[in-house]
Length: 406
Image 1 (cartoon, rainbow, N blue to C red):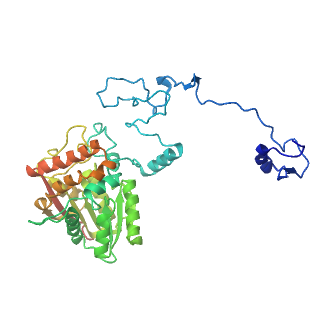
Image 2 (image 1 turned 180 degrees about the horizontal axis):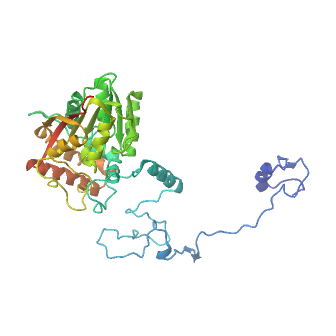
Image 3 (image 1 turned 135 degrees about the vertical axis):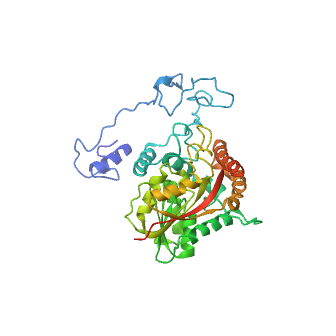
């Protein structure tokens, strides 16, 4: 090759090194650093090989997300043993372990960790991923957030309202219409209207919030401990054209970042039963309510001593809900400085919800976003509550508690 003509492989280096090469013709004096010498190439292997096959490191040195194929073979047929990888042809592409799933790349892991530190709750957890619940007693924010983060699955069997429905005797309307009637019963007791600011404690994906704002003209702030629920609620409210009329934040009810006396009313639809510190949550709600404002709660209530309605140790029900008794609502309200004005028993009107929600668990589209173990856990809670209701141990109430004026 003539002097002054750059090899095609070196043109990229010459261009950014300032060699002044254009179209392969040198236009500036050569300097020792203008052309980077070509290094001898050699075939690189990411791992040692033997007769053309990759050699895997010993099981003890493998990363935890790459289970060893030498794991115990004592598992039952069709069950992947702990640390085992599904069998595959040696030398072929590794098949991901269905029990562990593919490991996300470093960028995704770091972003998830940053979000988790900010929110103090798990991020992007599929429904029912937290399976070892026997280590805690009662609900925890982590378990509740992990359950509700799978908004796709929850939408299929519970809908956008995410609570029980209300049917009059002889009524056969669908679940969604019955849920809207229950939301309206709660809304009527808040006194919300134009110029009023309402707090929604446990707002979910914002279904009840949007209906309340649409019917009353009030503004609303919703809080949830599920990051995915908060994201979906913001998107759906923006698409519906509510703008600044609805705001949603990721906040624990026992430590809300609001000033004292900024809300004209508050609602809590089926969120109190998920709170481990119910007294602390009601105290925070009372703090942010202005004098004379009402808190309206729609939730389950045990008719007997606490603990009569509970799941088996280690079950989802045992670590996901803690239902207070009928009298406990009055005690909790008094401890928070609220006066109970009404306790409305609507157990009979809501009992049809169990059958409708169980029907939603059989929909074929649920299998794409929710595994059989997860559906079984949800069905366990529903049947536990349905049986307790039939036995007269469990009811459903609407509680109105007001903060004293002055």
